[in-house]
Image (cartoon, rainbow, N blue to C red; front, side, top):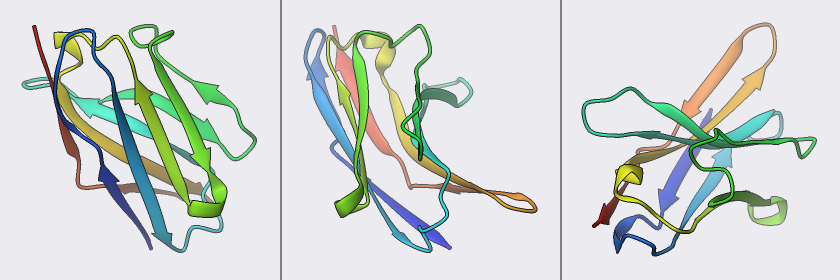
Length: 118
């Protein structure tokens, strides 16, 4: 099992910045990819950023140039730096990780609220 604990959400004005952190613990040795998803009110969960063990990073167009994912392997922590925040970035942000073996195992954090006021 893998446990993911997020922190760093909050209320910020449009144009501001926040940094989210996600600490992984448990059986983390074979995690392939970690990342962040978000779920705006009344909408489906969507990918925000991901980083693989090989350092491959992916962002959707909606956050490219504004969000940056990074990791500190020594601290088992993944970060999401969010700049130039917009009201449409308001959502619950979830840390995510998965392992690929005979089957895929997905793990989720409890979520942290990010609210961007206009």
